[in-house]
Amino acid sequence: MLGAGFRIRAATTADLSEVLETLAEASRWEVARGFPHPWPVPFPEDRVQLGLDRGEAYCVSDPAGRPAGTVTLQWEDLPFWGPRPADAGYVHRLAVRRAFAGHGLGSRILTWADGEVRARHRAFVRLDCLTSATRLHEFYRSNGFRRVGEVAVGGLDCTLFEKRLAPP
Ligand SMILES: CC(C)(COP(=O)(O)OP(=O)(O)OC[C@H]1O[C@@H](n2cnc3c(N)ncnc32)[C@H](O)[C@@H]1OP(=O)(O)O)[C@@H](O)C(=O)NCCC(=O)NCCS
Image 1 (tube, helix red, strand yellow):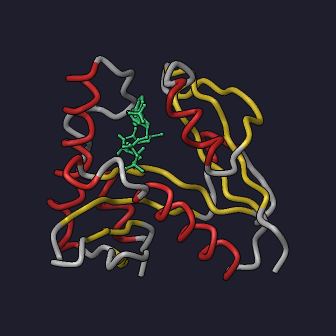
Image 2 (tube, helix red, strand yellow; image 1 turned 45 degrees about the vertical axis):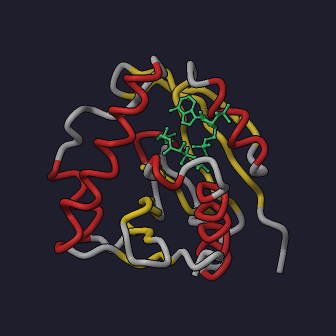
């Protein structure tokens, strides 16, 4: 549970189209707002399928069961963070459907990710974000992340953010 009746569950192959549509809706919204947008349009199905196969992709639904968001939580991230000790979870593809945006659901999902990472006895939550998406940087800072570096991946300049979890 994410609070306020929102639920999060591991996505299965049956959820492929739901996850793809959530990502596509986020990209359409970013384009319409003139925001920098990192994700290819359409998002490559095989990459989402890989996340489903690995059990790393999640679906968020509202109290009535309607699709409300998605997130992927990985346990390593070589392209963005390189080889590391097994000390973190890596958040990717965080998206909230616009019908549910603006009420803290993104933060609830990030708090859920904290719990998953703690449950694995890992101390850090890490993520990347386009360097040009400065409003998103504020969002992550307000959720306890700090900027720890820059990296270029696939021709995109990205800022690396990290949150150290308080010990249990
Ligand atoms: C990031 C996200 C999950 C947060 O959801 P939320 O908790 O409901 O919060 P909001 O949607 O209100 O977003 C928080 C702020 O970030 C801004 N923001 C969100 N995505 C943004 C983006 N891609 N670029 C620039 N600003 C963005 C919002 O406009 C909002 O700013 P405002 O309060 O000044 O209007 C959601 O905005 C989203 O799905 N964004 C598109 C996908 C995305 O960018 N994911 C993160 C990739 S690193």
